[in-house]
Image (cartoon, rainbow, N blue to C red; front, side):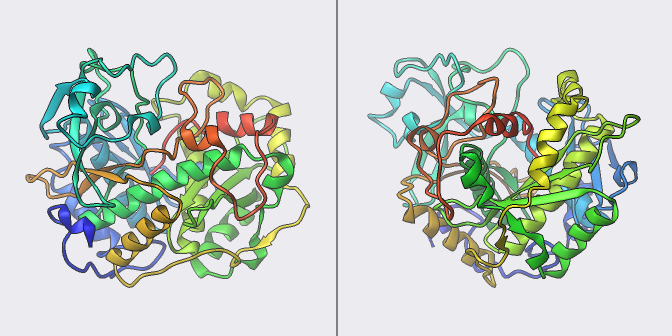
Length: 440
């Protein structure tokens, strides 16, 4: 297997935990590993915020006051142990990307491309007003291309999350984000998580660009969902009196991906709550759906708790727009045709190796030519962390245009399991604006 080129990735990694996720150890073991070193990473508190809402899906917030990016991370799961493991691992990821110890090179693209294998920078998302030009000196870090096993250099700006000033030399060229930053109990777990996150963001971006009728055709009939864990989450929303709707966003890549919207059925003048949304992607179809459902519950509590660094006053002002809430309420309660949940791709390997191999095969099938992994794991912690970068698939579109549209979006690629329709309309812009932060 090509990923064996990464130290720590060799060998078969059999799944041992199957409830709500696929892991090699139970979540309480994961959380215990992090607790031993969390003080060194600046983690000061784990707060159970589940009771601030009425849904009952466990959600925690993990605090790092001296973070160099976000000071608060979130976690969710079917039980509190799973939520704590999720939140702690998100904090671990950010810490590692803020404190990268791997060597970097300072050089221009023109200097690098003659002496090193370099990522296709033309397919990497750039920020609006990008300073990039082929002769501009910038920092580079080495990763491994999972499609051929060779070393490859990529811009450091799309790997680190240290946003303190002054920024590193050559900054201001490419879109900074945490997309593809992932952790796991084993390096392959982290890689699989990172691959799915990049595919998920690409899928959601392309789905947002569909026209209204094409997007409506992707709606899932939740009455056809039979998996116990998914049914438990759906029924918690319903018992809370909330409207929940799910659409399949799976693209030509074929890795299952879903978008979930949760909203109050009517306006409460005493408590105008923001609509909540979640995304999920995983080879196993029911796990992808469950991730979208639990992330929607987490998103709602993120607004309620008011703890997120990158949710500004304007975001809360949007929650008081009855017109906007009504637009999303009509979207969530639409009575159009809905597809059965089980009509779509799914894969469930016995090992993490099989999942990663299947994910890479799906990417090769749509002519993805580079899948880069930078191993950020630190020997003193022994908590696998990676950054996955796939040139081509792009991140979510934003109304305020903080970055240029990626190649797949611009070219209109990503043929759907349902009919495509580009460009998006007003609702596409609203959906884009409604998702501004990353969830684990």
